[in-house]
Amino acid sequence: MAAAGATLAGSEPARGQPGGQARARGGAGQPSPGALNGAGYPFSLGVASGSPLPTSVVLWTRILYDPFNAAAMPPLAMAVRWEVAHDEAFRSIAARGNALAAPELAHSVHVDVAGLEPGRWYWYRFMLGDAVSPVGRTRTAPAPDSMPAALKLAVASCQHWEFGSYAAHRHIAAAAPDLVAFLGDYIYEWGAYQRQHPGRAVRSDESYTLEQYRARYAQYKSDADLQAAHRAAPWILTWDDHEVANDYAADRDERLSATFAARRAAAYQAYYEHQPIRLTLQGGGYGTLRMHQRYDWGRLARFHVLDNRQHRAPQACTVGRGGSSSVYWRACAELRDPAREMLGRGQQRWLEQGLKESTARWNILAQQTLMAGGSQVPLVNGEAGRYWTDGWDGYPAARQRLYDALQGSGAANPLVLSGDVHTFYAAELTRDGRRPAGAGNPVLATEFCGTSITSGSRAQARTLQYVDMNPQLKYGRSDKRGYMLFDIGPERSRVQFLGLDDVRNPASPIATLASFTVPNSKMGSGLIKSATFN
Ligand code: FE
Ligand code: CA
Image (cartoon, rainbow, N blue to C red; front, side, top):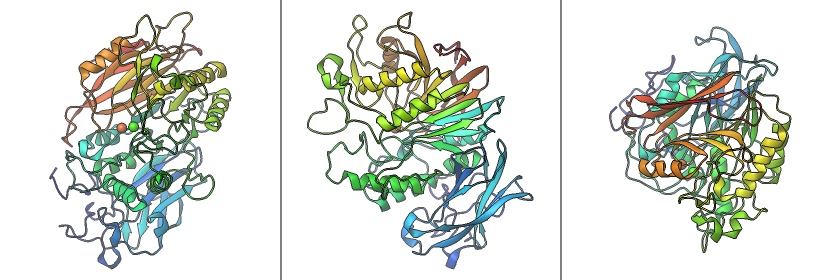
């Protein structure tokens, strides 16, 4: 792929889209016949779908003629048509309508299509004037009382633009999953880095304002491979810190900025504007967004999508600033303060109820940060350790409350999915992560942590030390970028850790680094039955 100008051409141009060519200003391609005043192709950021329920799914697009120049958009509301069909050729229309793309929401379009049939695939597209968007494929969740034979689930996180290509997204699209779960760090708010992404060079300063966050999303979503992954299946999403600011905790950022509330609200609004999610505002404006949601996949799986950023207590024992650090267990009493929350009390109660009422075969906690114990120094007689304070290790009392909820609810087969640390981990979660599993320390859940789509990590030798030092960690791999692909069935769940040969190469092949199987069993197991390593 050429270094410049090649980012926007869809790898599979849809019918009705002129050659997939989206660059208008100064680009080599023909302007779309549907362009308003010859401004360009209005669907330059592609389409997306998500938040699937048995009879509804959210469709998304944003009208933007040039992903790198939002200022060229007229400040007018536009009427966008949409169609949902039973077939890719749109011969059998299931639903259609109009939606408004308003400048107040960056000309984003969210359509919550209702009245669909459970458990089936649909195709969708948008139209503005004569221009037709790329065609996306989506599906509804299975009927509530059904037991699907399989769920193919792709799990991804952490896609720092400058750290490489989005080849992993090309592989996600090719895998044709039923569902994609994205666990945070969809954008990184930081200023310019040395660029390894093959797309167009962008000089971007750190994001603080609504306009800056919008520009960042447009830049990321201009990538053809990311667009392909969105077109392939519905997504469910949660966020982590970098959608707003590094290591933020609720209303506090690293620099303890007095203006952080306004920055967070701008970032939250831009997040909503660019994702296929239902808007659940609490109070006025975008100061607070409800991100925790439940999604049922028939009786096979219940997704408890968690938000451990917005409601958490500040990281413990950070002196003179906000953000995270590494602390010795014994040296930081605040770490163990039982009043410190990770989910917040409301979300914790909601989770407890969702677990208690669940009849699902698999209870999947889709959330952002590593739950397994990860001491950075050897444990002495199963004691003490030194911990990074931004993940669940920084909130041990809240983690015990979550384990209490898992154990007390009787919810079947808990699976924890996580991201954030840019490392593949397979872990068996016990009540006490510092001691080996055993009679007094049963395994409560299995955790699989994805690596990153692009973002960098530590040397593999160091990760192997972590695995050696921490009894819950069974496998760790930090030298590969990629994603996790699950095959979830009534009798077992299997996951492949897929790693790219070279993240800088958009054509990079991908290979299975390891795979793990967790059998269906009564509450209290969660053991990994078989593992293979390549
Ligand atoms: Fe990250
Ligand atoms: Ca993160």
